[in-house]
Length: 208
Image 1: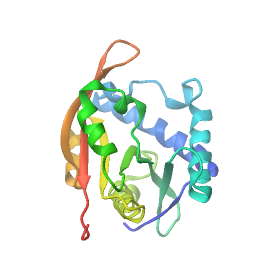
Image 2 (image 1 turned 90 degrees about the vertical axis):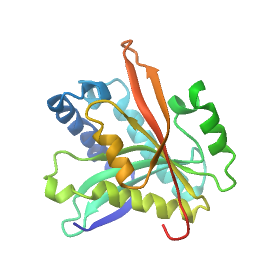
Image 3 (image 1 turned 120 degrees about the vertical axis):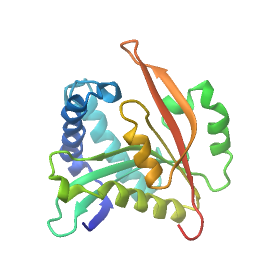
């Protein structure tokens, strides 16, 4: 399946919110509620508004270079142009849940010292409402786009963190697209449970 990757705009808000929601029933069915819980994202206070604000900032940064360095890209099925997946990255900075963890200080400090900066994958979601044959490979295509974008901004490193629980397939997936585990992480959620994950890194070279 071929995909077209384009910058997201505020007009993509409903698609992105729906894609977030689409993952929850799948996680529940697989017994992997430890990743994101059981509540739909759209039911969480402020989620829809913050999603629209993030999309507006992505477009603002793309067009003006001003404000938080955040970008969101959407993958569309090449023939139908239907949106099937999206990815959000931060240029040169991690999400607060990563940068605030003392256990990751060495890794964060190393990333912050990279002369060309880095890209951090904040979220990658394929819309589970879309038939699998129409979205299969969209995540990998978006990661390839992020690699290209990272080189274009003069950086050579891509980071991501992911949940390490359940059957471990999420970790395996990121390994399969070229990221390597560099440090375990965990933090306490609002309900008191522990979210365990892995910080990963991909070092690009001229051929990647």
